[in-house]
Image (cartoon, rainbow, N blue to C red):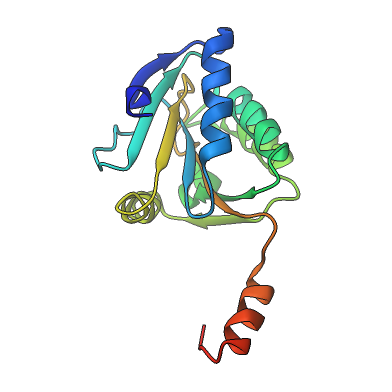
Amino acid sequence: MNEWRHQSMDWNETEDLEELEELITLLGHRNWLLLTDMAFPLLSAPGVQTVSSDVELLAALDFVLELLGDQPHVRPIAWLDAELDFVREEWAPGISHFRQELLERLRGFPIYRLPHEQLIAKVSEAAQQFQVSVVKTRTCLPYTSVFLELDCAYWDVERERKLREAMGLEH
């Protein structure tokens, strides 16, 4: 899917939506799917594909979470910029409403927070071995990007531990 690396996505175009659905079907454990604000940098690691989208971040998140909800093989773990909790309304009008709506959408999913630079480093490290897909949205609010780390939906840490124990391996 290298042709998907840097292109524009019109969420009203059926072809673009089908391409995103196909991508999500291909992604698996250890892949990342980022939904970012407009100022998010264009990452240059070889394992990163980026598209721009003419929709707001929350609308993109709704669509992606719906697609992920239909997948039997992966489930998202959400990572947010730690800075988001400290941005004041007077500094970025609309941020309070955004935070409220974001947390509503992510209810029921594991959510972790790290400072922005640490999250970018975590994603850059993952991109050395695994696919990272970025959907850059038109949202212009700071520290609003949502980093979705994909985990296996049909296997968990406890079963993996038991497997390693049965194999005589330390996990």
